Length: 270
Image (cartoon, rainbow, N blue to C red):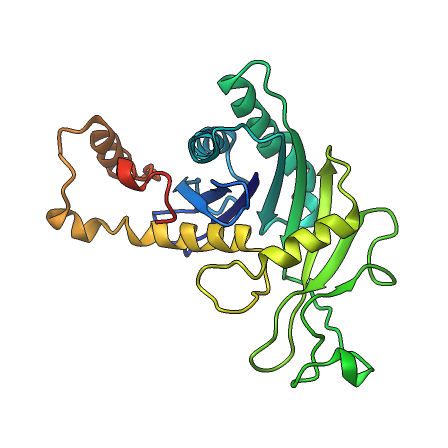
């Protein structure tokens, strides 16, 4: 199973705060996904354990509904965290994922691989050989850099998986911070690169693994559905306990939770 997570932030003066989202594959090929999102405090890059527990429980059920199986191996792609927060991702987010698994079945212990995806770096690559260049003199899709500028001790690499439309392409830095599956580096690189061709909104390969790409889109999309100025045309009942809780949080100046998705959209990429 492929999991991806991201957090989007509003401006500091915006009371809606940060939005966390997570997507998970719902078929064995890892091409169809379900998304879930919720508010995540204010300017907080780490996803709270409560949110992660809720997200993973929902997505595991979606995977089981689509495949009639429970995944033995889970690859968790996390976007947007700095190097100083890697330990917190393992201690908070990964621990909450494991708790969600044991909550569903006390004897269920899948193996996890956690990969950090980052485009916030200053490395650019320029091939010397013309055979390795595209029309803009960028590396051809599939170019991997795994020595010289990578860490001596850590499991990391740079992957250029797309053709830049204009200018200099920016590779993505992938760093494995947890690997219970003992995934061979060539296998992981091939998995990431091949899935970059399955992004549903593009006809070519994209620069970022689609699992985190979808999570980024979902967190931005969730913000659009929570415009309180449009509440007068919504179908939410004022007597709904969840809606009462939201309005109470807004009146107290707190970040309210997101409204629940319709049941027909729960396991879809809304």
